[in-house]
Image 1 (cartoon, rainbow, N blue to C red):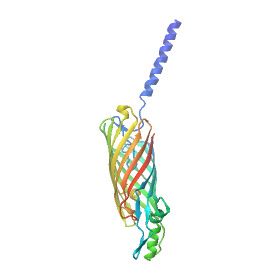
Image 2: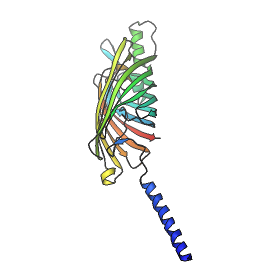
Image 3: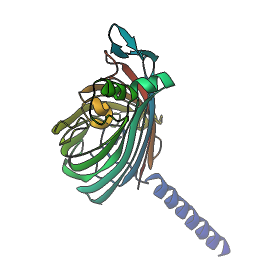
Image 4: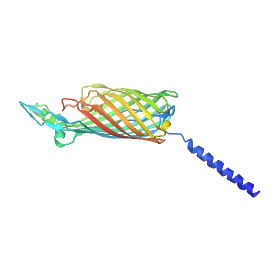
Amino acid sequence: MKKLIYILILALICVNAGNAQTTTSVTESKIPGLDGHTFPSMEHFRSSFVSTSLQANLGFGTTSLLKIGGIQIGDHEILSFEGKILFFSMEVQYQQRFNPWLAMFFSFSMTGRVGTDMSMILADGVNTISGGNIGWLIRIKQSKKFNLSGTVKITNLTGNFINVTEYFEDVINDVPDPTITKKIPSMSAGVGIQGAYAFNPMFGMQFHADYAIGESFERKGSIGYYSAGLMGDVDFMPEQDVPVGLALGYILTSAPDIVMSEGGVTHLMTGKLGYTGSKEFELGLQYTYYHLKLKSVDKKPSISTFALVLKFYF
């Protein structure tokens, strides 16, 4: 009889251990996805999924070697320099999911550029843009392989521009009240659409398109800002059991926090190498290459930036 009791107790222990292992193995991922595929998050590219998350991006980069033209006085040019310009960016964004089709997001960001030495600082100045946005993410359609959402948002930015060269030019040209420092606020309202498609658990694609209208840093009245992008990615975790993801994308944008005070349009070529082994967070390194119009340079310099992207899901 005692032997039978011992056998029953041992059987119950084994069943409980098996149930615990089964519960652990079926733990669902907090990272949203489609058809077994999870999509990477990237700087300058909003996700289409309604979820609760906290994302932080930290980036830096430099221009190619460039020549800054000086001030032309008669037949002579003064304050002409050669060097590089350093770019930096920081963004923190939180998104709160209220139900399966609605989420609210808000963010704070700071971007800027400054010369790598004193001569470049004197020639191009110190330029920073800070602020944030608040808005709603609304799911429009979702199926096994496809997700489509829309956004409505308000953006409030403040540009701080310090330019010694422009100050001297204003003094020489007798411009009233010349100043080295300019602080210019800018507010805009916009709408957008984001989508994701999973070909299979390994391959996926994302796209977005945004349009906003608001104040210009050049103070030329209202201006329209637009951005559109397409990105493809591969995740080796589902089929190869390797926690590595790769993404490659293209973005066309006139966003003021990217093109700074000069305006215009820029084309971003971007790629990301990420860790995909977690069910609660994303971690990756993003590389972006583009050309940007600068008032202080005749030709558009090439810019290379790196960004660390970290995102937690709750």
